[in-house]
Amino acid sequence: MEKKRITGTSLDCSSIVLGSVNFGSKLSEEQSFRLMDAFVEAGGNMVDTAQVYANWLPGERSLSEKTVGRWMKARGNRSQLIVTTKGAHPDPASPQIRRLTSELIAEDLEGSLKRLQVDELDLYWLHRDDPYRPVGEILHTMNELAQAGKFRYFGCSNWRTYRIAEARDYARKHGLRGFVCSQVSWSLAKVDASRIEDTTLMHMDESMYRYHENYPMAVFAYSSQAQGLFSKLGESAAGMEDERIPPMYRLEENARRYERAKRLAEELSRPVSQIALAYMLAQPIQTFPIVGCRTDEQLSDSLQAADIRLKPTQIAYLEGKQDMPE
Image (cartoon, rainbow, N blue to C red; front, side):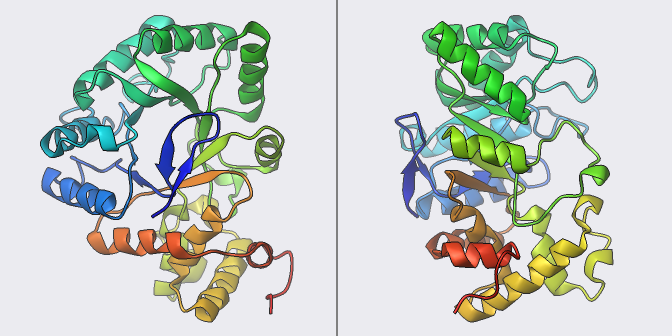
């Protein structure tokens, strides 16, 4: 798997990133280690985790970070990886309390460093925003922590476009370091905004896409396979009525996108799931899809998508902007 330099950094990241939301909780430590081993063996070097992962479940907290930390310690491979995590997410038990004060950001960060068993992160993300807090205050905190050697670069996750723009402008005006990348939900599937249950999750939309076109900044796309939407459509006769499909994806346009992806998959002799992921890899803005896998087979399928090179005409076809290219 090839690596790409993350815009504005010295970090070379594998084209596909491994998600770890279920590591140590829904997946055992043994299963999690096996997936990370296979990912690294295939050329992967970034495992996406977060302080809050699994904290909505009863029992031990921050299991994903702890599992990734124990794996790195056991394998002795910290230097081969882009070590990253996310903080500043409200505690599921107190969702009304935003964790964007200087003290709470530092508290989350120190906890993550201990659980990952490292002294410094390569990339640290603010998992949520507090739109009522001045963006300058947040950036000053992040710059102080970077200067203290806690992390090399920092990004934002689930921030709205106007706040990302405000942060960029403030950093430039005041000579500060700013966000180098953003995490957002994005896939081949369209989203019905009126049926999104968690409104703190940001989904790629037209304004955000245009922003990234105008101001180059890497996008790390979670839910990059629309929670398995296209595979489920291929497996079930129920179509969009399949109860496993989240309501926000139940759009006729997604049924049409599935049919187009299916036709292109047949043309290229590839599974539809790989076409959906290859769509993300072929975006004109720098995009690193994050894949969440529970089995060795799912991981292998996802990683094979890295070998597909879709053309702009094929991207346009999948989006319904033109007929099937010759």
